[in-house]
Length: 160
Image 1 (cartoon, one colour):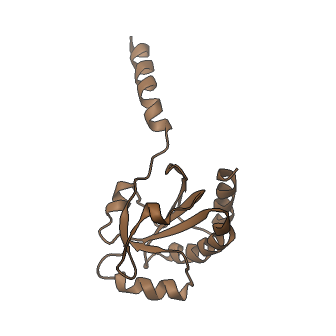
Image 2 (spheres, rainbow, N blue to C red):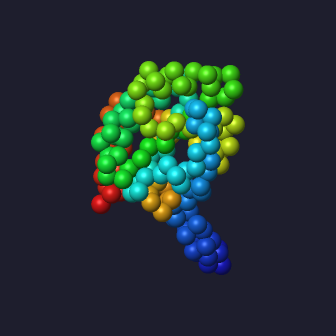
Image 3 (cartoon, rainbow, N blue to C red):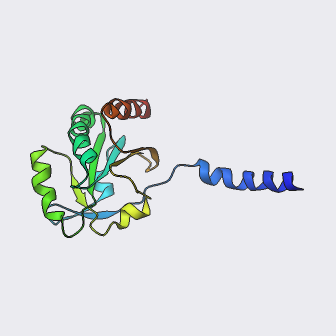
């Protein structure tokens, strides 16, 4: 009986946990105070969503590499959306920081961390790779030297 119950639970729960999370359309403000929709910013093939904060040192290392990935893949239907998680006290640092890092992809602000919480983002930086159907197909947490090669490989595999 225990085996049957376990098998039944496995049969019910496996499809739930075996499927990728779908990203809903969301709206956040950009650094100019304009509301931007995910559906208007997403890439035709893939979208890289990078969650970060100005106080996060690994985030600062990741952003130039993400910019390089953006420049490499933007003509192939890949877009990057940067989502800053700074609160009201440090949000003023975001624009100068992004200019210093020469970021050219859109930066949105999740100042209340609503989207961050909804997607269970607990480590910064966290990068999500989302396909054209809105399915989150890859999640990369943290950043160390060499991670850009791993992320690039995930992008190439997803585009095949």
